[in-house]
Amino acid sequence: MRIIDYINQGGAIMYILLALNIIGFAIMLSKFFILSKESKATETTADELAKKVLSDMNGKDSNSIIEIAKQELSTYISNMERGINTVKIIASISPLLGLLGTVLGVLIAFRVMSQTGLNNPSSFAEGISLALITTVGGMIVAIPHYIGHNYLLSMIDHLETNLEQKIIKKVL
Image: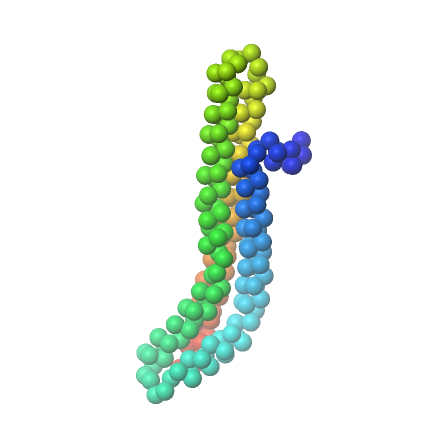
């Protein structure tokens, strides 16, 4: 059986999961490339942020300079984190959508069973099939997004640490 057949059998929930999967992977890939590029250009970024900090100095003490540097870095990192929460949300709601499909599939199976009895096992099996397919679909979407979210956060943490060290050296 082809993947599209499974998606069709899963119904609307599988189409929602497919759309979320595409959106999530697009965000993860773009963030991965952006963060990879930024991690190679930490020296340039540190120079730019240090210039902003030094322009705001105006005879301030070293504690104030460090605080300004941390604020500039925080703003920069906040921009880098944009979109990663969406990946986290996709990782969180995908199993719930799979569970919703499971409940709907079992509901359909019991409705068929109450209307026709067990005279028509193929109709009963459709509901169970929907339940199992959407459960698997939810997990297939959730697992890579959960891993991707954690990996991107670790990349951002590493970038932030490197930039903080370089900026502090440049402004003090």
